[in-house]
Length: 487
Ligand code: NAD
Image (cartoon, rainbow, N blue to C red; front, top):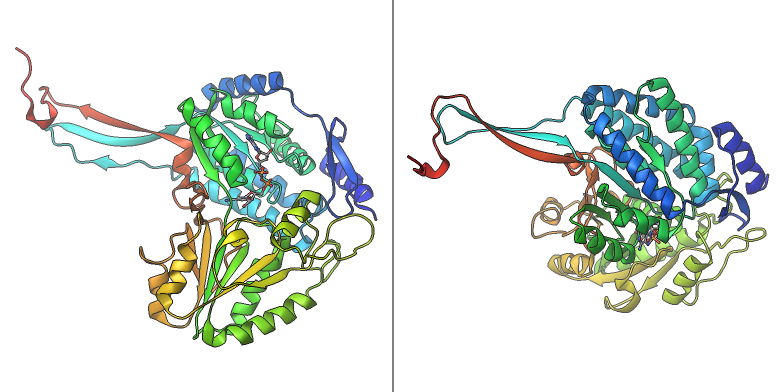
């Protein structure tokens, strides 16, 4: 079946009506598979007003009741896992297993947020004044704007929305203009959950469609209390200062340039599998894709030879076919980006249309030029090291700071890698690859990756405001710091 035919089928299963001026093309064959209506700037500002009105009501709904809505969204996602994952495959080009994994991640974060809705806790702090109680509470923040990238077209919305809803915040989503249909499908599922829930305020979950201008309209709207933006560092550089200018909050999840150190004691069988998945998976189009391999010189020749073999054997092709590990690049611009970094990149012929490339290995002796940038394609740069300290320095010597990993069976090296003087990234793994995070941990990175954290741990705090309360239950008015004042 052609992607267009399959998309028609899936969209009707998911309850989405295609139509409008923003077309979606499948990277599988480059053909249009459906369309949605692009939002105007007036529609964006109306959406913000509706969301603000929803906020005034939703913030008063008890958090565990808000969790019930997320539970219902999770149920809709569970039931629609297959067709939604297939649509992700059609629109973003990832293989079926990864499409399923992406939807599972949405289900997982919903489960997590439901539990969290009963765990939004503050502190009680010792007061220096007699008969005073000092506490810290977390209150809903306001409307959350969520701008997402093409490569995780639905999961990133869920990471943000599931937490925002239980925290008491309405959400307006601006998905990537390259993946509008999967967003429309998620909104249709959310609509069903809202109906079952019954009394959620109008405008609690909204979606505006379009490209950069639509994103900018959200960025500049003073109703957006938190703007969570996932995408390239260039996008974050534009968005961050604009939100800051109006004293809004932003949560930035930007590009990575992730490295793995392979030490002499490493279990090479495990390392090879991890390298293959991290470097070639999703055709190198993950923020956590492995881009730099830092190998000890004593094992480099053998490992590189083995990787070259594996990379040559990997099945590149239609992501819907069984056995395919590497699907297409998202578009022509992505292919040009790869050619700029690696002029020898050859297209693999896979039927008509679509841009398919074989993952590449490039050995370098210094970290300069293109290796310092994030090229969103499957290119793995290999560097050699002699001393452990040198490997850590190489790992850290880039402007990005998202994910990192080490393969070693030397306990001291493993421990040192995750200390303050080890990897400077938001994610530092031992004996697993750089990609494929679980939702229980906080996800995000340092430096030009933007510093934001989403998903698990205490990431929920970004979606709430802190209120410090000191309560006097005595008959005097003692001042802090022992100050005497008055008559
Ligand atoms: P992109 O930066 O081109 O676009 C991302 C989103 O931002 C899109 O919705 C786009 O319309 C919007 N946008 C772009 N410029 C904007 C502006 N000036 N104002 C407002 N909105 C704007 O990124 P992409 O090509 O879709 O995705 C790939 C990039 O995303 C890679 O750099 C990848 O590393 C990064 N990414 C990061 C994470 C993370 O969690 N750190 C996750 C996924 C992807």
